[in-house]
Image 1 (cartoon, rainbow, N blue to C red):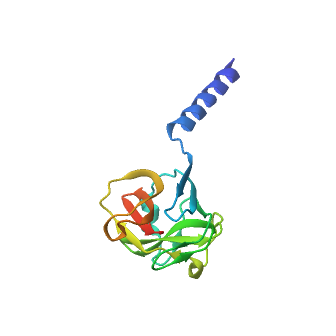
Image 2 (tube, helix red, strand yellow):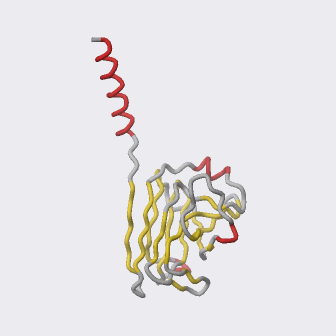
Length: 166
């Protein structure tokens, strides 16, 4: 009887923990104006800004390794992205300055990628877009100097980045 009650209590706690803070695997699909299909896959990881503050200037970091796949080459004024798969990440330039970057292939958890291989996107960092409790990644029409262009966006806590795609 005590054993059954103990197992029931463990099962109840496990169920409460599992439902208290769910994370979702997400897929975002878009067709860029020139016809290239873009697919983003990621997990809605909690926005841990304490971790972001501890990142060293110049480091490429990727919260849970989100991936971007391009069906064809994408070009803009500053970069050419060949068709293929990229790990989405950010490079810390300063305390309140970040750049969206793509790393060819997948970066394994705990792997320190070669920063020279990262493709830095022309980026706008904004800290006034509200707060995302969990990471949000999307492709949207740009604003400001990216008006009329397709941008990759990442919202993580109070950090909001737009990176020029096409």
